Image (cartoon, rainbow, N blue to C red; front, side, top):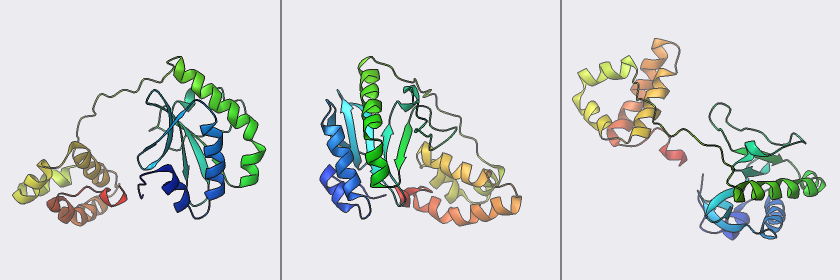
Length: 199
């Protein structure tokens, strides 16, 4: 995903959702939220704390409420885009300008509630305890045969090691695990992460 330096850059680069992003931005800058950029996308904060983000994708434009799980969501608009991964973040997606305009008043209520929650210090505490690194047998066996591979793997960051371990281990069949291992060995030796091309 491309990262942009300013909100204007982000909006003007959107092929399909420019008008919707401009409209969402106008709603957000009309509040007490401070506008900024994080992770290459527009973010709206209070005292440096993330409250709401906006983003556009191929099929929708939406808002990200960083503590959205705490919102009442009486309309049932919010979704968790990554079940079992995301604890607090919730999205509200719009597939047309008409849908966005129809829900403007309710959207403003959600934003105001999110601001009040942030000011009151309501947050979901996320467990930051690192998970132990568990490597699949196929990868460990490969280290005994290839010391260069083992050395390269040890020099990777913990998150990259985890990505490779989970990628190989998640295959149900041994043949698939071995095939995945063969494909990632050159990447490991180059010191790149499995998902670097998407970052």
